Length: 335
Length: 93
Image (cartoon, rainbow over all chains, first blue to last red):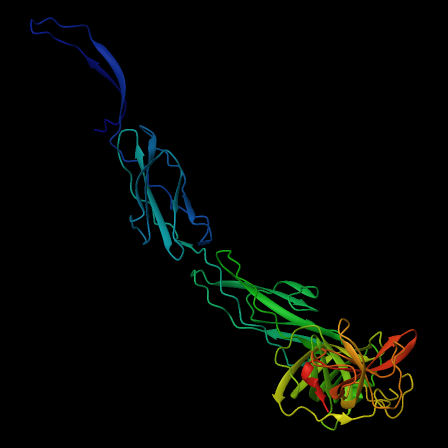
């Protein structure tokens, strides 16, 4: 016989002398049935960069005495209780403060107003706390000193993600100067290379940053050393000097004769002068005697000297070219 | 090039020599003349050597200087100059 439910209880009281009181009654709820098992709790997402992890679950209805609250268990293993194990009242959420690199699981059970405890829910999907941003990717590499193709291809190596959530993708910036994003700036997905259309006469620099699946964004990589898209490549310094203003050129087989601030002078091995090279990005390896390449756009300085504005790089070292002895009147010549 | 002779050599590493006719340490240049009588934009005689001026350099010294052949524009004319990047580019003779 099922006695559970709302019942009327009657009582009469008798004293030691045999006197009996009139009957009194009260309504009670007799509940010996455990409340239903709650649904599987859920976290905000499988990964979070917020150390505060919140699990939520759905309410359960106890038909007899009603749901009084819930017992919650949170652990670092499925079903574990090493983080929290206790009554949380009649709420549908529990927050804990987690440590980066650890995964947290939750399960709950309902308690009714008669004190019956329901079954344990299924264990939630784990929530990994990852507050550590990924390391910077490697410096993007390009096709070399200069290219004649109308496409710049950059590639880099994936960095480590110490927090453990794993890499989700990369942000790439391509610009006409180091650390600039005036050509392209955006999400390139989880690819470790990217190509963009390029225009002759421009120099392209790239840098990249990684994002992990917890939403952390790492620092930018150093900027690449630049690649110039030129119309004419493989020139020695002297013929490059003869190109008109605005022409783009790549100079090869040049010998550095002097370096002063951002300005580098290059000449042929055969001692024919090239244009002054005005660097738009530092090239620490360049020194007198360096065998070098340069790329950029030709122009003329206000003082009349030809200049290649661009970037340069050393690919060897040799003797400084011997100076050509000149009289005072011959200095400059008829150029 | 004002009063120029010979083939163009701007941008070339060259060596010139002569007697120091003027020094402007503030503007970091000095003039030398080898007797050819070329003039500088300042109106003085000599070729302008632009770059670090050695502390030991005095007017009247005879020196050789190695640098890059260059030029500058002043009052609508183009003038010759030698660009140096270190004091060691200047050696006494």
